[in-house]
Length: 479
Image 1 (cartoon, helix red, strand yellow):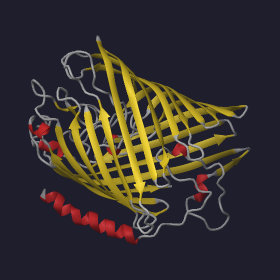
Image 2 (spheres, helix red, strand yellow):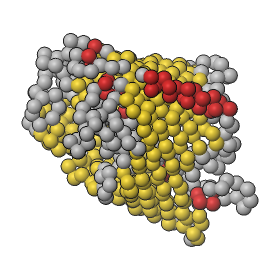
Image 3 (tube, helix red, strand yellow):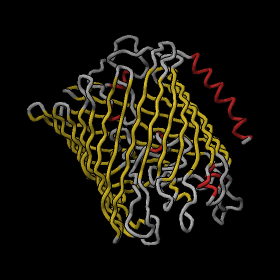
Image 4 (cartoon, rainbow, N blue to C red):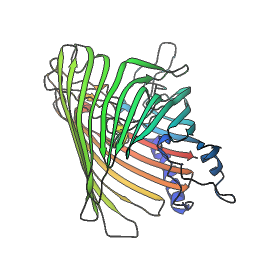
């Protein structure tokens, strides 16, 4: 706890600096930077003959005959300081290392991505992106994890053919690629992790009016910390994701049918087997009463793990309200996250599988739980001290959906197994999150936060139950 308290002044000094900085003015023809750089559209950008930004000439290099090239990079660094990590649970390091892991430590994560995006006429596109991700020594349980390091890798490398059919457009993309769908509750490139999710395979896209339909046939690419990354033929992801864009104040709509496979999966019981699941779901979002916003998403899973059948579900909802106060643009919000858990250990499976989510965004920034066997709710508020700054404060309550199933960690593995006969309490704990974000200027974003987890009775039943303190400071430079 002392380590975290000592780190807090840096967070609040950074917050004060955020409030004083001024952003660079943007212009209408500039597309916003995105984590998935292939989603940016620089086709209409015109480089100024005089003035402009230092990096503008790299964003659209004219190669003649309707051919152009866009270059860019994203450089990130984040300091993390933990106390009580894993609720205080520790374990020995490998035999070659004499000291044990600790549940308090500070370390720095960093990564750099550089890409080249070639457009050849109207119908051919080639996108290549390289990445290196590094971590200083991390003495928390797990050491430097797979999600922390990837010395040098081609993050993406794909070829795309496109054409038009009447007023519709059709594209086929093949190669290594990252993607995120909807609000990334189930499929995400996972930007909070230092290494990013990506898949090898095929993606087709059809656009017609307000509808966009994506079809996938892909295989997950495992990270090798020091060597070439290879696709895992046993971990497939396939199916369809359709989006109808909002129009005239009406709601937006997502519909999806996603299949995935994993080898030798065991969930809440001794039996294990190869898993095949299908997730059928949808999401809708919109606004109400001029200042309100809402979103709902839910899905049902069927399939099998070995000889056991799968029958699982999830449901989430969020609503927000902007107060009529122009000075700070305050917004109040709240929501719930539910995902099924096993009621009968060892038989058919009712535990929801979260696929490849951006869990960090929804169930607390300390990342103690995943969207599996969870019943969570949150309330919060945000304000904007300047046009480029946002401060938010969120309170989460975390509980088990089933007292017969485990507490699952952020990556979907078991964090705390249920005791014999089940948990006496379903209360995992509460978490409070403070987040400060600021765009210093067009290319540089800064952020910092503090999270505290008040540990509940379900954790205390199964081992160490320390409260958790988490402080972080980060920067993102993009061009």
